[in-house]
Length: 192
Image 1: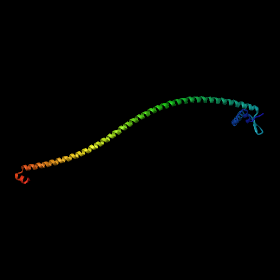
Image 2: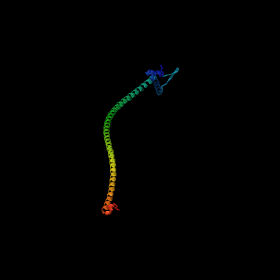
Image 3: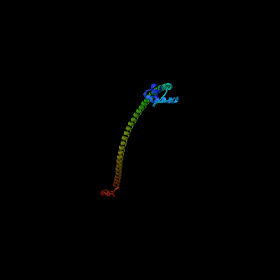
Image 4: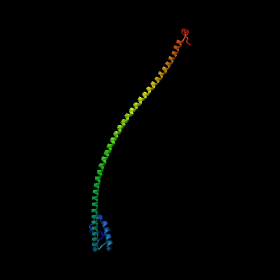
């Protein structure tokens, strides 16, 4: 009795999900082995002796594919394990670097706080110095104003002294004239 490509696939236990794919493999194997296909009604069928050749060839290929898949799976498992180890090492290094970075950052932050404290102290010192400078400038302006006032007073006093000296000189001249005046001039009070 002859079988169709579908019946061969079902004979091999192929699921309905893989039926189309498996039917194509059977057709390819028929072409590869140059097996004669006959038509019965509207179906193409293959002789039972040829069905045995096709199924044994496909089972052998399937066994090779399965062993290839098994090797690939084992290789993938080895690769996955290798990547897990590498990932573990990288995670360890990452943790170590993170801790180191945290320590460095902590030291830098401490240094920044220390420097900021110094800067604040210098700013306070500068403000205090600036306040003292302003006080000194005010005192200097007050002293300059006093000096200017005293200079003006001194000039006024000098002028008064000069005026007094001049009057004193005039009085001395008058006294000299009176002393050297004659009796007549003294009586009449005409000294000139």
